[in-house]
Length: 177
Image 1 (cartoon, rainbow, N blue to C red):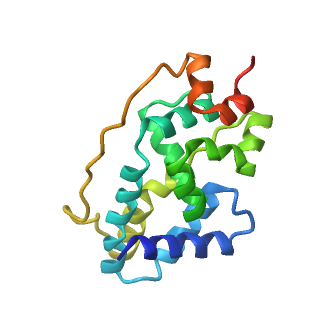
Image 2: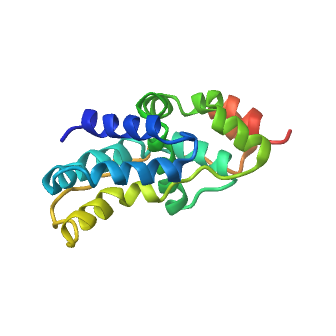
């Protein structure tokens, strides 16, 4: 299974649910879609999901998560990337390329106004859960590997000036000047 297969499933889930902005509902729908596949296909989707997490593992995106969610621990950053995956391929790829582009995403703008976090832990375990639903067993060891890249140059996320330098549009939404 490929990244294209993964993204087709996410898009199918997003088009099926009543509220595609509800990341947990999208994750639930992805799980239901996976439950209709062969266990081998489901297991093969573990690697593309891990590849997306690796592709989105960079300091600039972590800073965006920190701004948007009012902080982001290691787990918080992972859950934010889970939310980002539920947004679909276009939003995900644009955010990885330019994290400040998240300022254009309506859900991010709404989070800025209403003060809630954008996270989805459930999508991160959806392959494991669907595989177990289908087989009664845990995902086989070796179904995927994880190699996280270097995060890149860091800076102080609590330094508003540095954040505004790196992420000007998100800073405008989330920082008080």
